[in-house]
Image 1 (tube, rainbow, N blue to C red):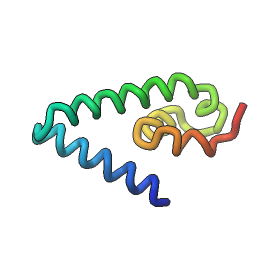
Image 2: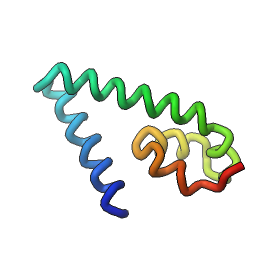
Image 3: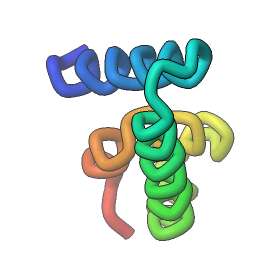
Length: 77
């Protein structure tokens, strides 16, 4: 896994810990915003994910976690 994906996983872990322990409400809003952006990203790039040959559920979770880092290498259709 490259550095950008490692950073992304670490960020999601920190956001999850913050959400669980409620350190900062502002960070929780950022988490919800980031989650929403990735949902929209999945809908926009659905055709590319579908045509990549990947399982759609796998593509959904990879998009939620990595976003454009997952979608960019997929073949363009």
